[in-house]
Image (tube, rainbow, N blue to C red; front, side):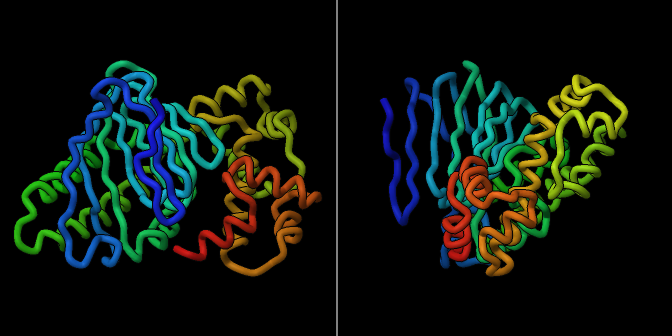
Length: 292
């Protein structure tokens, strides 16, 4: 049975439970002022048990959370992209985004940290995490001890625990940003990504990109799927959308002009592609993000 779990301030959470699942072993912060009034603070955290068929959808998410998969497989859809996450992958539920999380395997475990604060969005942007849905194969040996320490603080909440909690949230984001930068890619894939970065606003095809890299299109697709979980053209579109979102936030350029700057001669097609990838029109995105 589909249930609406919350609906407030333009956001909605709904989904489906299977028997007793999901089981949330979360501890919530008791803060005065509340977490959202700090620069950066933990809202809640803990372990999470799921089974196949459980799912949650968020419309215009009011939260930001980090979800580290430790067992089983989840499917996550955000910014119009569906990606599967297994052990060692971490997915991010982004504030203001529409997202769907579905459990695909009978025994599926993850660890959750939810954060808030006035500095959250600027930090996510500075660390290159604002447009990210999935981080592949994070360094669990460094990330999980930080999660463990934060969970312990939330459970005990000793005197002045809030300050260490805030520092731990920052360290977790910094570590994830470092993981993202340090991920080693095959030279051919790195070359293809550099070419896309330099020419994303120009007409690009998978065949042309493969020829530039000196490989077959089959090899190119395999490299992209294996290391990035998406196709070459999906990567081009994702980069165009990333730059479009930046332009929408940083200035008041007309949508038609932004479309041209990121490689779309037709503004209507750009708006359609933006909605497909980001879940809303360019104008809606600009209006909503100004609230954060």
